[in-house]
Image 1: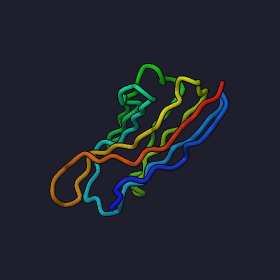
Image 2: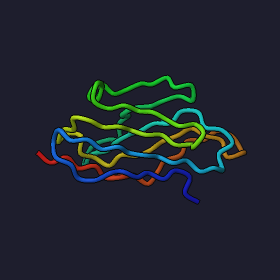
Image 3: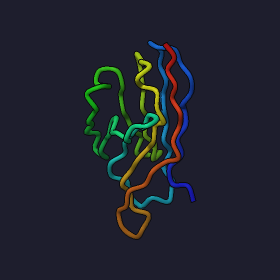
Image 4: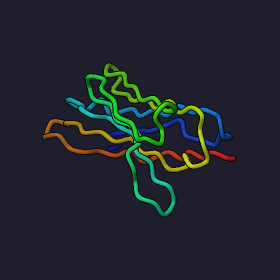
Length: 119
């Protein structure tokens, strides 16, 4: 069963914007941190932005001032608004959460969504 479903990726020109969404399953009893990570070809997966259930956020230095993470706790959904996109933002973006499905808090990953920024 898929617990996290991402959407919103695509192809955009440099300077453009995209908004990613991550919908967590309604089966979660509780969700703590939700976040976005990205992985470019041949590189490790890195944190982009995270947000706690209370709204505290943390960003990678490379996206500060350009990306904004938010969440709607009522919808179990997190968003990543990406502005002023650069070619180096090209990667597969993965949603991540620490949530409880009723048998303890565990880490979950989405299937990933491709973001491609052309120069």
